[in-house]
Amino acid sequence: MIYTLTLNPALDYIMRVENLQTSDINRSVFEELHYGGKGINVSVVLTRLGIKNKALGFTAGFTGEYLEKLLCDEGVDCAFLRIPCGNTRINVKIEADNGIDINARGPEIPAEYTEKLIGFTDEIKDGDCLVLAGSVPENMPGDIYETVLSRLENKKVNVVADATGDLLLSVLKYKPFLIKPNHLELGDLFGVSAESDGDIVFYGKKLISMGAQNVLVSRGEKGAILICGDGKVMSVGAVSGEPVNTVGCGDSMVAGFLAGYIEKGDYEYALRMGAAAGSATAFCRALASEKDIKNIFNTLKTN
Image 1 (cartoon, helix red, strand yellow):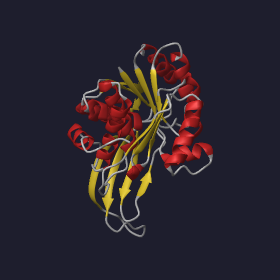
Image 2: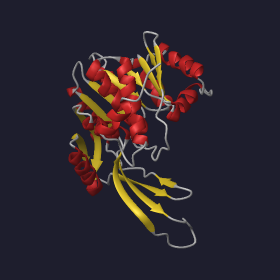
Image 3: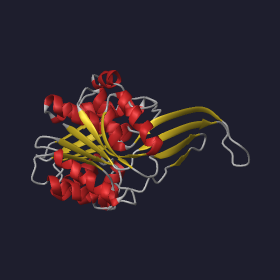
Image 4: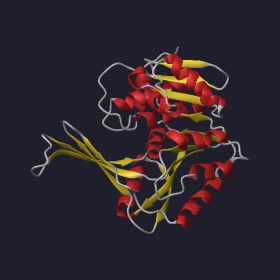
């Protein structure tokens, strides 16, 4: 079983506005409401690829109820803790000549519900996978990922971490199966620019020496590079075209990689599936379908 953990899920309210201005009322010409949150995106793509998983995290209020409805409609198995106060956040995305993103803080998480969530992870068993995706809300303990992983330390659980900065570095001592920075985040970890293949491999290997078992580095239109713990390095390109979406591409790559690895147990196959899922989402208004992913998969080759 794969578990995904999203500590601060959201509804993303997208509005398209022509000629955005501050001197008068703006009227949208298009609106959409989507589920949001990195772990949630991973769960949705896994579900579309036929991989059983369970989404963990917190929801609150009427927005939380609607978020869970959207996920249930997708067939995602939800096991969110319902907190008694506040509402699951709504992030506003205004699409215009100069787009505006406003991300809400989210509800206050009572300490006892944090403890309940940590206790819930005790059901994770040997052979399961846990995906830790996204940042920690400011009203939660900053070491929550470490607390969860410390409880799993004596189990054979494959941990996937898709986080940034010190939060990512803090989980390396638990030897995660996979971490997935993009090339900019990889450089930021070491205070450098990691643009070339050589730089990415060099700093990816440093992360392996610090505890990661495998490092998957996404590179946008340049594809992705996988640095394996056994010293193997492989890369895959991206499909050509004009992307229409950047939201969820990295999450889709994580889901595709896991789906591919579960299917074949082969890193090269998993890398192609990850790249295909990330690319397919880049060409969709929302997350990619299984058909889109499989179509792109058949066009990709690894090096």
